[in-house]
Image (tube, rainbow, N blue to C red; front, top):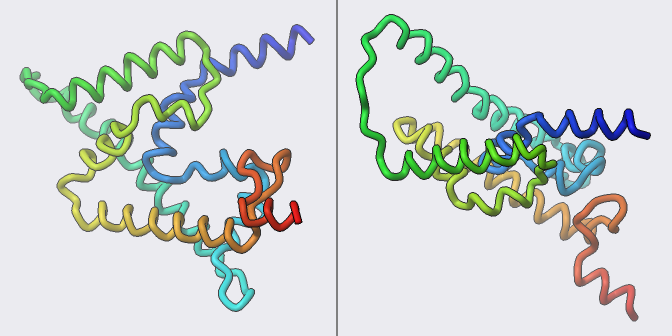
Length: 186
């Protein structure tokens, strides 16, 4: 009823744009596509000789921790900056674009109470990834670990979809593969 609608509207003030930005840049947003199948089946992947390895759990945890770390750095830098004399620093053009997208687009979506879905982040492509790379530009080994974890998740996802033939609409938003559709049409 009306009460539920007002609760849903107030939840749209949650800055979902920033959550989607973060999960998309880290590559941990497959739960948006796979829904419950992500939690019940995909996290068990990859299967080796039919035995679940659960490698997706530490891969996703690693990337989630990596996503939290910049907020810790920001908080720590903010705490230190209170004790220093503020200096004016010229931002690069890239930082200007990143801030415009983050505060302009993200702020507009949040204030307009838009229920931001993962595919909305396409409008800020490739800046979410540039933002992540910029955060870890001085930590090349960590950035490489992020790339390798994302590669593992991507390859596992492709293998999962190939092996299962996809998941019918209604259970997820992914659908079934063309191979299975043609097999069913025969």
